[in-house]
Length: 254
Ligand SMILES: [Zn+2]
Ligand SMILES: [Zn+2]
Image (cartoon, rainbow, N blue to C red; front, top):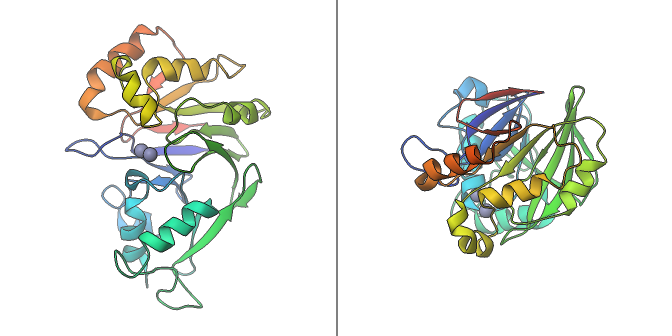
């Protein structure tokens, strides 16, 4: 499995883009950053968009991607998430007010976006990947995912505060190769992390203790760029060889 980091920060400002990861060139994991990084040719290869939750920093490029590729590709793009998330996108974004409803464009019978709902822990096969959704703890309905291909499995938390279920499900994977976990805030901002459903550096380290195999590499994302220096310093102080801070443009080969 190849995972390319398009954006990996918890806010957008010059040099820092919000969460978007490209798996095996054809599947997006969150869509906070897509169209400003990938060429139109690369955008045309995307067959699936997996979304964790409805916050704008994870969805905003769905709209622009749909617009860019309409009329240029054969077949639709699957928009994959929990029922509740897809309902919110339909009602509030793809509603012909904020943005055209690309689930009916260019035609009702041949739209560019098709909703593909997932249910808790039910595995879904898309192309070379198997996707298992697991609910996590955020301020809105949010789903993390365990994603597998022939090379192994990864767990991706999306935005989350303290949580247990995803680690219990991850434990059942016998070929877990990597963990992608958020750490939005430095330790001094634990209260804000708590009320906003995010993790501090120490919170992230505590979550990792819930995974039995302590050698599985962990890749950290969703850092608030305003506090990136201190977050990186605190992660270095953990003195853990398994923890890596993601950067835009990184390619992780599983
Ligand atoms: Zn969020
Ligand atoms: Zn976010």
